[in-house]
Image (cartoon, rainbow, N blue to C red; front, side, top):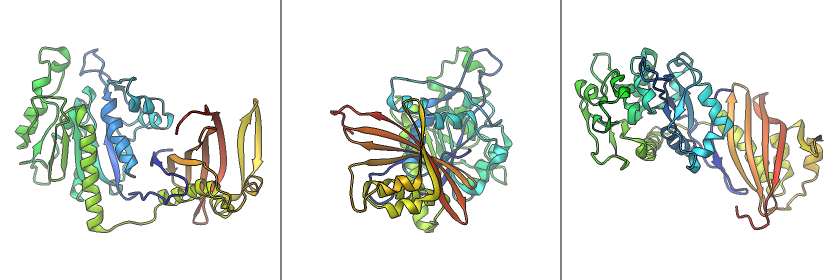
Length: 378
């Protein structure tokens, strides 16, 4: 599976939240493990990845990850006391994306409307000089797309030039992690291949920054959206979303995608069960689907028809459903949902979904649950 598609909360009985399936965002990360040729460990900045990622997927955008070599990347600067970081650190679906970043050769540029360079010390190495990533970024930008960076991630754009060898950001205000806050006597800094400040300026960009630091400083100049340090992650992501939505309205392009079709059948399951609508479940499920769970250390299997027959038409329940994730590869998808029955149980559902005869159908459901304290609030 190669594509984490979306995380969205949907209260049972409400209308589906629209998604921007045509607007995919590509995250650029680095494979570097050490500062240059030293033995000083470096990594991609976890917060600078997950804060924008979380905002993008909640806004309905698809996010893919690449690195110069593809495959696993190092992550660091982790704060396990931060709830959002903890959430993603223990999210196997998400962490698998960082273990299996795409190689630039796998990327179909036409799929993406924005490219985002995440930071961390690792971002200083291997990205800026990668010709394939440069070509991807220039192609996205050339199609009215957005180039976004954060902190040391700005290093990745220093070599971006147009057909006339002129910098794409010439004359534009760009920010990133400034030399002002680097420890220039430290071995890590001496291992840097260049200074972000100087390279942006050398290539006719206008490097700007806040001398306060940590104040969420960011700059939007045309279709370049750049942030100074980790504190600017949310601002950068929100500005990218704002521009993408504006572009989407102006071009008026919106088609029913595989993502939307899968979201629709998951909503048929969630809302159909909550609102007593067995016909919606029959629409979502393949006629031969089965359900699997483990109870008292024993595998329990039920037929789909047996499951649906227990739903009484018009009998509503207080189930609250949320789609947690959808992962699509060609005609196969895996999805995860959470169903909460307040003060009773929380169910975690996993679905195998296949596309055949032009339609997506749920062919398999497995699930587990945990009891909720009677006083637990949802």
